[in-house]
Image (cartoon, rainbow over all chains, first blue to last red; front, side):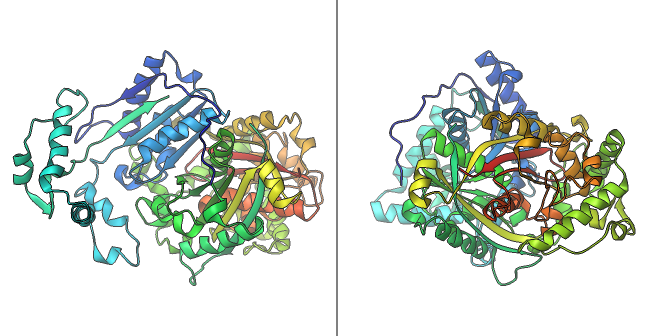
Length: 224
Length: 377
């Protein structure tokens, strides 16, 4: 396998935009994408006509309730009469969007790329977790009806047992990250909590408790 | 960008149903054949990155990309999904190689459309939920109907012309091993059919088909080492989305094909596509689309005239879909672009030509097209 340690071309990030992270935004997915895109264009001092290519990143189509979600999002992402494509690697899609933006430039195909990541999960009924019921192998796993937290619980158990990690240590991660978000205007879940708060929160699937996990938000985000 | 070599091809299926295999088994078959064709390479060592082209709703799985790696040999390796047509996946592979992160890339696309019970409803889910889906169209082909009428009025194209496209492609498909829907049908047979949506009958619409295709591409220098001169090169490519909102799109014109092909021609240094190519392999999932796309590609300014004069037939001046196109082979969902590319590769390898143009469309309700210029090194 080739390991690239000498990048052909350095690529600059020249603008970024972000929407609020909220439980329920009233804008459509296209509108969320455009809000972030226009902020990024403003910061870069560019207009849409200056953009060569658009890369879109978005995970399950069912979150937004739209099939061929990249096609639908392209209008809101500024992808009109331009090379547009959507990349997808499960939960890592956001970072993959930036990687794809990078190689659009580094390969020489484009000079200025708008990389857009969007997700709108609030339309899901009864809850976005229902979408995660359909991420499993349809023959071997789906009949068990697992959900994500069920899987996280098994993994957390194994991790704690293998490496001798305590619940209190894992709780510190939530304490740290929620505290760090208190002054972030885009964050909806920042708060000053203690390890005790985490350990007293509702048990979802042991050893995962409510304050160990993130609640779902919707967001649009872009960068060049 | 540097030229990229196509060094391995494998396919499986092209039948209306494939009950003996799952979609993953189908891709495994195609991948095994592609790696053998690429000089018996081992994907675990010899392939640097893996790309799958698929959409959640076609698979019936959320985060379907997680089901891509194993059957391609991509587990615990750089694997990603391009949620788009296979030719868009190919464009990403070309970028992987040109940006320096990979020398060899494997791309897969597949269709297990026979598993889909409510295809029409899934297409409606691809329409804008507020402005289009909410009118609850009884038939998603209505968009093709509007597009066709506008195109036909603008270019003076008749129903008989569309029937001639069906006759030409169904007959041409008889020489392809992948054309499950080829037949010796006549234009009169097409004209006798009732309309599904004016001006299109059932025979004007390509059926859907199961299939999997895997293509291995490489930096040309690596390709030479693996295959000597037994490879083809990608000299140019482009992919473009027109306005994806139907209410702001320009129906009746394939703007996406025009912009994508201009991009590909610029890359390949082509000034006169009509003279440059020996054959054209273009999306014809609706009969009128073949003619509309030829106009968009600058291959024919008067496609109905070219059609009637036989210029587009397999023995004509510029053969279009000489192995049948989608009308004869069926539409394998996101593998559609590769299905046309596969025909182009076969055509060149059979010695019928040296330079081919491949142009794919993602179907209703999209306005996205991809173009590839493929030729002998």
